[in-house]
Image (cartoon, rainbow, N blue to C red; front, side, top):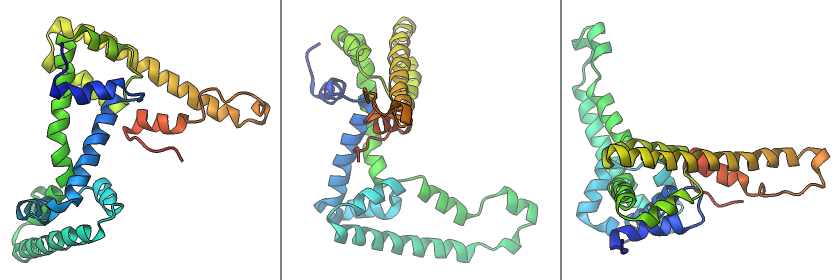
Length: 241
């Protein structure tokens, strides 16, 4: 199958030397979404309306704060807080615990709690990333069905983090026929478990290397095993310190 625009990010991620190609795709999407959020777009009314309503998850507000545009962060936080204060104050003023019985109060969530739960469940950056990432996952299965070379590429990759292994395991049933899914699972399970064991073995040797009895022994492939293990277990790519 010839390379199409929608297959390029997937092929690039699987061609890279990564412990999880899906983590790599997610990281690139995250970087682009943060750059968009912190660029001139934050001054546009429609984007500001969305950031005011949705806010940001802890991970992405931290990434935004690390950006050079501190004024942009301040402006978004300011208008978001103005909206939150106004709307929560109105809900809190209307909520009267004494108007309901104790048992009813325990059963039904107050509008204040519902508002906060909705706020905590949303993030402007996440909502930019998630639909595109879902299309990437769909593309993986499309390529698996149409491109024999991609099957080989997936089967020879360094595996996946546990989180994205689970996503591929689940979504494969929706995107592949029964026969295709069975073949896919054989490959998926093989690369996941083989590479989890490989990285875990490197971590084990990293630990053993700190035993004085192994002081003169070779580090083998263990020096960067911690950040690689974090990718596998936490689906987060970090730079080695």
